[in-house]
Image 1 (spheres, rainbow, N blue to C red):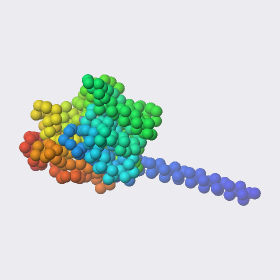
Image 2 (spheres, rainbow, N blue to C red; image 1 turned 90 degrees about the vertical axis):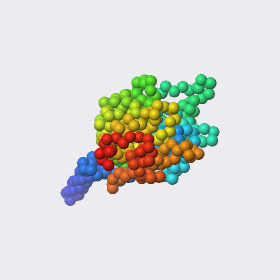
Image 3 (cartoon, rainbow, N blue to C red; image 1 turned 30 degrees about the vertical axis):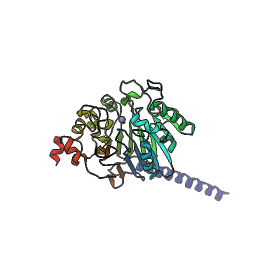
Image 4 (cartoon, rainbow, N blue to C red; image 1 turned 60 degrees about the vertical axis):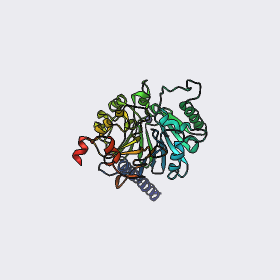
Length: 372
Ligand SMILES: [Zn+2]
C-alpha cells in the first residue's frame, strides 16, 4: 500500500511538472509568434497583396490579398464588367473558390460596381462563396435614380442580401471596432497574420463626402504593416491619425486613387510608407477635372516623394488603344515573407518617376531629383 501511495505521489508530481512545462512552452510559443522584437517576421505564412487592373480605363479599386491559404478581397472595381477580368485573375490563386473575407470600403460605384454586377457580368458575391463580409456603416447613396431605376448601390444591397442568405456573415466596420455580435477588431486571418479594422470617426458620424465613410484597415505580419484607407479624404485621414495608434508601414495604398485631397502630410508623417500603390488609370480625365486634379495628382506625388520613390500605378491612359488604356505597372503584387518585402508587377517594375508618362505629364519633385 505504501509503495502504491508513493507511486501515486510520483505520478502526481510528474503530471504537475508536465503541466508547468507545457504552459511555459505554450507561453514561449505565443510570445515568439506574437511579440517579435527584432526585424524578422515571425509568421509562417506568406502575405501577397495584388492591386488589380480592372479591364477598363475607369477609376476604381479592387485588391486581392492572399494570407497563407486565406483569400481576401477589398472592393470589386470600377464597372460591373471589371469582375470578368478580376475574377479570372483571382481564381489562379483562390482555387477553392472561397473568399474568406470580403471588405467593401464605401458605397461609391467605382468600389461596389463589381459587387452589384450586371446581367452579363455576375457580382463577385455570385462568382465566389463569401464567408465574412465587412462593409462601411454609412452612405449618402440613393436607392433610385431620378428616373426611378435602381442605382448601382441598390443592386449592391440586394446582392449583399443574397450573399448573406447563401450563408455569408455580414458585419459593419463599427460592429468590428466595437466587437459586437461576434465581430472582431482584429482577425487572425492566417498563421499570425492579422487583419485589423481601424477606427474611422465617419463610421458613426455623417459626412457630405461619401469617401470619408471608407473602412480603414491594417494588415499586420509580425512587425510589418500594410495600410488601406479606401478613398478617405483629408479630414478623415486627420481623424484616423488622432484616433488610432498607427505604425510605420511597409505599404500604403494611396488614398483615393492619388487624389490631391488624400495621402496628406499628417498621415504620411506617422506611417512613413516604404511602398505606395496607386489604383488609377494615370492621365485619364474621367471626371472632366481641372488638370491638377487628374490622378495621380502632382500634389500627391509632391507629398509622398520625401518618404519614398517606390510608387507604382496600375494603368495609364492610351488613346491609341481601342480600350483607351494600357498597363502602367499592370497588376502590382507586393509580397512579404521571411526574405523581406518585394514588388513584382505583371507588366514591368518601373517606378512612377522613371516612366515616360511621368516625364511627359508630371514635374519631378525635389526629393526625387536629389536621389537621382
Ligand atoms: Zn474610388
